Length: 428
Image 1: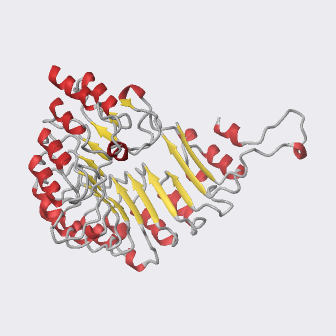
Image 2 (image 1 turned 120 degrees about the horizontal axis):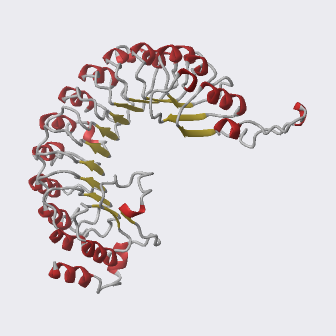
């Protein structure tokens, strides 16, 4: 179907001079999600889309494809024949990378997904051949080791965005080499399980870092204290989801009272030892967070919601006013009683809320009547993530205009809405 769509239509007995070009020949950006990426598909794209600068090919095979239905080194050599590609996302092996590198010296971003056959040789070829790359994303690189970044400081690269997900052979030493590039603003090391406190110590020196994700790594409370001495002053987003060694103390280590914190997004999900005491420490620091995720934390209870609802970012502000997203899905101690803290005048900026499916439908309906602009997910969906809302049964969405609920409350509108929730709570 893809090849038919991209190829020019041919009518029987029609001369070559009268074949109409494809209506897509001027396309500059193409993202395809298909069952299989084949040589034929790549050749068709290259032949018919001469103006292409962005190419993203994603496959989801049910089983390992046969050679005839897979992308081979022959197909990879056809990529970027016209020399215009700036951004590329696909999968291949070492030889394919070597064959492609000469034609991709002007590439600015590369995303390599599912590269089970690529080793350090292929990854190093990219870093040393593509001097203009500033975005590098590698998802599931089982053969990627510290050697890839051994001499990265000797290159002319100016990396600003690096994502190395599920690269379990990467250690603190490799991260130390990587962060010698001081221009990093986004660093994603999720599910790199051998990353620990020493890596955080090196990362803390990145003065331009805006987003850091170390989900599932081996970091501890003391390791996070290293961030407060440096990178925490520039960080806007931090995710430490699933870091099992962390406790409530990580909050006090992260948010030193003397530090100037710019953090607006914090993910504390799936931390078994995070409790209400940690949330209380967070509230005392008065960090004006926009997004707070604490899903699947068994020790988080109604007390945490009460604390967050009562928090003031400053003396003149409104209670809980800064939070735009709050994810409390599957937190062990959350009950229906906490919903009284989710009504006005609390959390007036809140637009996304994640709760467990065990919450009474009557309580949810009362909350929707009270706050029609609130999106509530209760089946474990990742809040605020594009493409996660296909199942309408799992998400309550109200397509009203984005009216500022804080301004509406100040003006005195809908003063009687709180009675609905109170009545449901009394009947529960």
